[in-house]
Length: 155
Image 1 (cartoon, rainbow, N blue to C red):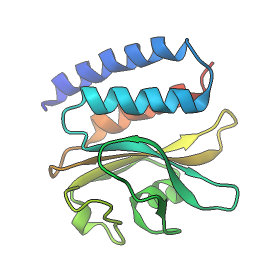
Image 2: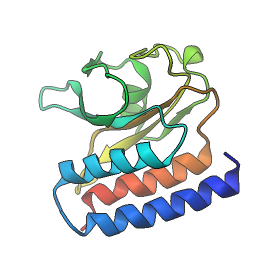
Image 3: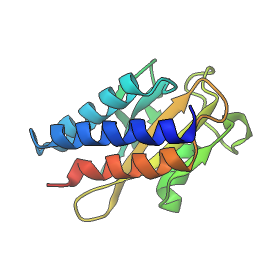
């Protein structure tokens, strides 16, 4: 999708999600809504969902849309852990070239991960999107997905 068109789509989606966030302050409900809307409105989102840290340090799948996911991700391996450990959004144009990539579905070709922070600013997990096409994600996705994910704990 061309950059301007993608940015405009994200702006519309962000407004829709922000309006829906007013209906509940429950973080899980908000994550469900975000995953559902993005998965249905962004044509190249093949897998869209959240992995959250448990109290014992495991990274476990929670709400998502798309094919069956890895239920738990091995510690400090893969794109989700990279986003959490580096405390920043990670854009991977070609997953096969990412060291330690975890292939939950062999059809995934590119990926973006946004760290999820709670209301205190602590990282509690990762928002993960896979595409079945190469080079799907860029800085436009990173910028807008970061804004959307921030809405989870916004009042």
